[in-house]
Length: 534
Image (cartoon, rainbow, N blue to C red; front, side, top):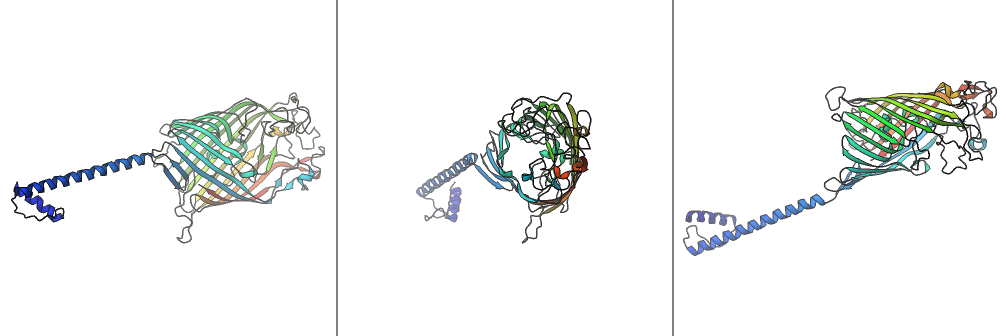
């Protein structure tokens, strides 16, 4: 016993814990008792200190569980609860564009001459070069209680403010999500690609002309079969082709039904087909447009309340319009098979869309009249018109990054000091749209515009003002300085079938006799974009 205490005391002396004079051979019982008491006291102090350390660690862990988490990264800025169940994110997208036209036509011929300027030989104004802000979209999105979220994205481009996205959703499971509000319709493939992720400056005719943009309603969507099959069904107010609904109430009361299936059967595999996805989207409604086309005297006037669209080129110049007294009058059905493929630096997207639309002609006065009475339908004028469009686009990252449906992350960000040059991508696309030939005939089958003297409001569209088809070749290059910043340059050349006048181009709509159809001049456009997205 004495040996054990003597050895322990020696250890204490060696570590400097005891400064009292002490001899290794001390036998005095008093000294041993003092030493024993001192050791016990030190042991108790060590235990107290250890417990305080445990308490501090427990307090720190408890604080960490409740302290808010603040993040700032290339994907945006956010703050949220420590458990991740509650969060608000701030994102943004700004695109500054420039459009230069070496050839092309600006369809403003229906305006008064003092507003439209001097017409060219085909009855059109020349296209004008312009700089503009294409998208200015701050975004606030978040979630509460882990399963419920929201998104609000205003748009400040175009000289006015509007809500692009404004919805709430419940993310109950990967297989079951519910979204309500204004959002992208779950129909088209290219439309579901983010505005900052698209490979070309403008989307194709499939997306911008035929399929819906954004709508108001409710949708259920999710991933099933090991997340290899995505489904979505929705009930929405309905929009004209390429339409983006306002956030106001829907005046008609009819609803449009949307559905989409998209499969990625080889996802997460080592197969060369791992980047393959394919599916189909569709919409259906039975809709009659506003029969009072006197928008001047009608409250909340909306030029799309006739339920019909106009179509624009890649340079955003209108090349097709329905006649002023034509309205949607019945069933509208759209279908769109779609696919993409990504393998290493190579990407491919292909999409087709077809719309079948019932239309009718109205009697009486057209837009700008003085009556608010409902205008009746011309007897026997109801017609089903089918238009279609398709596109195929490819991309290749010459700097070797992996292509994807989403954005590009360069291997080396652009940095002159470090020698990084970002990522460089070559892109090319062919896209076309074809209008139903009956669009340009009157109910009796006569073609308005080709030496016909039929009344100007008796055909669904005028072939001397609206083209029967448009075909566009696009080539370009994208330079990704980093994952947030991109320069894009596209050259787009479009040819038309019809859409111009021969014989009296300077007289606008003043004559109908002797007019004949001529192809609208090709549009040759150089489109440039500087984009920052976070």
